[in-house]
Image (cartoon, rainbow, N blue to C red; front, top):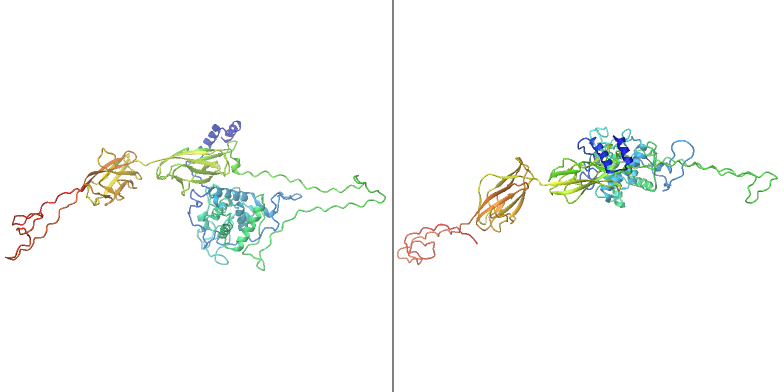
Amino acid sequence: MAPDIGRRLRRGATSGAVVAAAVAALAASQAPEAIQPTTDNAGGDRAVGTGEGTPPSGEGSATGDSPYYTELPPLNTPPKQPGVPGTGTGPLVVTGPAEAGIPATVLSAYKRAEQSVRSTAPGCNLPWQLLAGIGKVESGQASGGRVDANGTTFRPILGPALNGVGFANISDTDDGAYDGDRVHDRAVGPMQFIPSTWATWGQDANGDGKKDPNNIYDAAQAAGLYLCANDRNLALKADLDRAILSYNRSTEYLNTVLSWFEYYKRGTHQVPDGTGVLPVDRSDNRRPGGLPGTTTPTPSVPVSPSPTSPAPKPGSQDPKPGTPGTTKPPTVPTEPTPVPKPPVTSPADKVAALAVAGNRQLTAITDSDFTGVPRAAALDASGKPVAKVNVRFEIVGATDTRFAGGKSAVTATTTSSGIASSPALRAGKKAGTFTIRATVVGRTLGAAEFAVSVTERQADTLVRVGEDPLSAATGTAFAQELQVKATDKGALAPGVLVTAEIVASKTDPKPATEGPTFKDASRTATFTIGTNGTFTLEKGGLLAGDKAGDYLLKLTAPGGGTLFVELKVTGSDSTPDPDPTPEPSEPGTPEASPSPSASPSPSSSPSPSATAPTASPSATVSKA
């Protein structure tokens, strides 16, 4: 399939039809909805700046303060322009001092990590030379670049057991999964992460589905994120120092890393994997006197001695000025012309088109996970897939939908099939439409765009659970509970947003201007149906107000569900309690009251009756 696609692309450049055919072929070969691990942790790895995981603290370090290489760079720093090549035959000739050479795969991993971290945390200003400085001090650039084609070391790089003898005392945290030690932890891999730190900061930067501390791509990416933690700006000296000390809490370590950092900033060159200069002296293997060992001397370029002219033979005349003499000047040997190296091409430079590979249109209901994710295909000019390309997915528009980890933008790496998939996508509480845009990091190619819509949860039926009437006297609260169940097409409808309004009649849609209110004094409120398909308005959730009468609580839901609940407000009892019956007076004593009756009437007028009156019944009072 790929060769045929390539022929069509060459005939018609990268036309839309051809790209579509290539994308269709690639997409068909993918597992259904296989989500590609991302380079910035958004698919489960730690996201930059989101506060997930435990940030580095002053009480620990990435390496557990394991030993490190103490050799310093040469005093003569490499020039920024290419140096003088060596002479003679032998291995591949490189330019500049040997110490400035970084193995090709290791160098690629550092630069890719910088590019990825800068795309998600531009404020950190991570330079790849800092990763190179740490990689030099921790492992001698992965033991001189002894890694396979995927960037994994041929054998694990392990530090000594952190058993408290000369180092930190760290008991086993990974059951030996990374370091093979079930008693104590050891620093692992080219960037020397201890297992507990790797558990938080580990990455899958090469897209093979594993977070491997012995893989230089994974380790460099993790180191970059670790150094950028706590919102550090590595362009500031104080933040730079703090970042390095979080890796290993040693002032000598800080100075050693900074020395290599500055050295690499002056200039580096790429060397073949496995040919990097191996350091010797470590902080746990000092030479007598406590000083670190010296750096392996760099062989200097041999300089041809200046030839001397032979003395003229007796009797011969001196040559005239400007005229060749009889004695030929010696031939100065010329330096061999260095063979130019082919330019290093990154995977992103090979991409000719980025196209939608799947799920061009995505739909979900509010507050739920999308069933699919955006998938983009990176293709070269011949229509072949390009692996290990960083693709940035960004949510564009007014929405609270987010990728895993709460991020609105993430970076993923294309697989060997050229497909990059975003991490899981979750709809927020806001309905609407928006776009997800995919671009190649570091390139200005056209974007691949995905149309996304989020719809409200719906319920076509609302019913009341229970039949107790809702009634209350003016000036009090309704003492009854109201429970409502929502269904859609017969199934429970959790998460539906229900609008509640107090109205005067079923025919008048306007909220009432008097009578009952909710506790916040309004006559309109919203409620969310719970996971069991119901919502409950607790006792006291409605206030009767000061106007007696019959009212309705109108409930509506997206999807057509409607329910009216009767609310009855009665007047309060305004009848006063009767006065107590006075004791009879002594004979001959005048009445205390002008009334001839034995007991006063509830009325203020004197009653002619001699018998005690009956209290008048209570009256219903409606306050205006």
